[in-house]
Image (cartoon, rainbow, N blue to C red; front, side):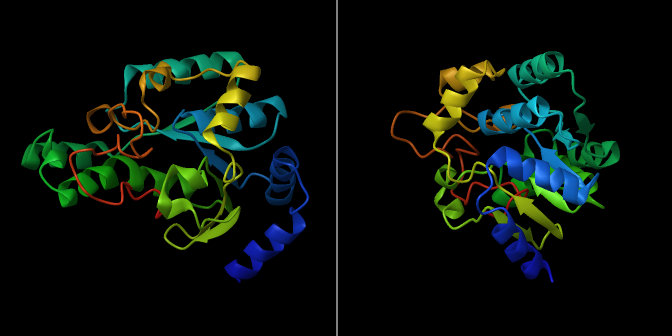
Length: 233
């Protein structure tokens, strides 16, 4: 059934612009369309498109408790510029307390398993709560962000969260993203100008050097697929 829905959406929207597709989804699925933002460049493009077209799409973010101040700054500027609400989900306090009580605040540096445990508590569990009961999850994923994302499609069924994902910027390049942001005066995280391409939690993100992979700045101390569990690719 989910595969049929994905194929139907791909067919129905194949000649639509991004804005037309967003409007179609908002009308078709009413209050069950959500967009998750981490205030990165791609997410800011989508936020601007939703706000500009006054679409009834719920925008939410995950506050892990360990974000950069610069991320909170762009969060604040976005609220003020577009006069919108951004629903914020936090990790369960007791889960964070137990993690720190038993393993300390920096256990994620010690192993991939520990890092994934921290990501689950601070990101995956709150995301599960945010997506529950919704039909469409809009993301800012782009194919060139990592090799794992090259085979994504505009619409996909996410089995883990039992939801249809829409990746509107999938085929966009970083140059196109930056051009849209500049042309439309969209608030941006100042860290992007300092070599931070993919921005997550402060302890787990660094700037990348010229020529490095776009995901090299995430969990740079480990060799992994550089994913936190929100997206399988």
